[in-house]
Length: 317
Length: 250
Image (cartoon, rainbow over all chains, first blue to last red; front, top):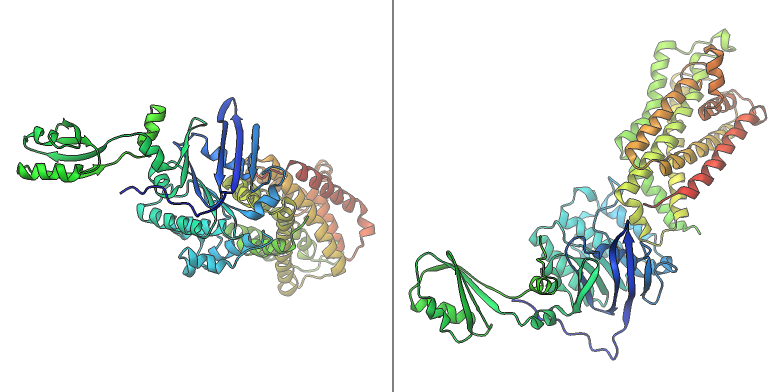
């Protein structure tokens, strides 16, 4: 079941933590980020979603202050990432897509070392506990599994107790179980009152985690809203999909009130319709007709469908 | 602005990391002592009237210290820095409030520490096992070692800015290191080489290190080696300026 967007904490006025106006960045004649503008509110999980190469990483690096934009203005926590870089980095946490630690360093050593770079830092052992790795403080970082390594990097991004955390492609290359563990961590971060700005190309991740998303394609933002609102605006239909081996009465399905149309491609049957009563209607009809079916599942419109509708392209090429 | 706590942690962490690197440990800590053992086996250390009553090892021991200095400065600094840059390690540092000056100073001090450790092991072996004679002042010798180390570390940073990746840095380092070792009087005595070679050796930084350290080991003073001091000091200053100007995080 898809989750609808999560309720905000009741605030009189949502504080804005990131403002980007007309952000533009070019490399060798290619416009990676094409004059985008957006805002991020305090306490939310904001996602920049789009296929690889859409310009997400360039955009997030400009906001972090690691890259200088060609044009546009950026304000993070009221500071200019270029001019007030050091001051800003005391208050934010950054997690990188790729490992980037010296070889043969141990988990505890890395956390202890990086904690010393900040004016104020938390007890790193507590952080390790929070991410579920308290027994791994003496382990070599390069010997950890992918999921464990990502959790260490998250801990590193939280060392200075930041108000705002940047996560770039957090779960790329992780198995589903590790991915879910990391998602739980992110929600925990938000529960503690921090703002999260993340980039991802996994629509499921964006739907699951983000309060609001900006869908990015070729350097432009094509939509910004809560995932639930974007999907609802499609007014797309739900689908029930199953396989049959023998012929059956398709009319029995078409007669179901919420069904709009039925398609059959070889063994596969797709029933389109409104969500309410669709699944039960289909199953009842098949049951009554004593039709044998297998692999029955429901499909809802997702952000992938939103992307397709907005750009005319599939997310995955 | 230098962040003291960060500097402390950087040096301690990096020395620990260096000691975990088998290649580094071999070249910095073991290579020169092994060379000493090898030479000791071949030549022994009996006093030789031709070199003023000194044995072969008495003459060569200080020059082996120059090898440690060159390996750490030229190879270690450049390969490690370019390697870190390539792996994104420097960028990871840059994402924190760590100031570049603090990082560089931490790196310099770490390499100083490793050099001193390597030379100490070398001298310990030489003095205890091979009974090498030491006629100089420990303080002056240490100062000479520090000056030479600083000069070569700054050369290493220049190399790190020039080399696009650690593989190129390794090649460049080797191309500089081995001829230096051959032509600076470290391995073969300069006195026995033809005039042409001796002229070339004057332009090699390592020659000056060898001359200075050998002189200090034998009890001479800085005053007698002003040229070496000037050359090495000049390299250190020029190298530092060029390195600071061209240092890149990525």
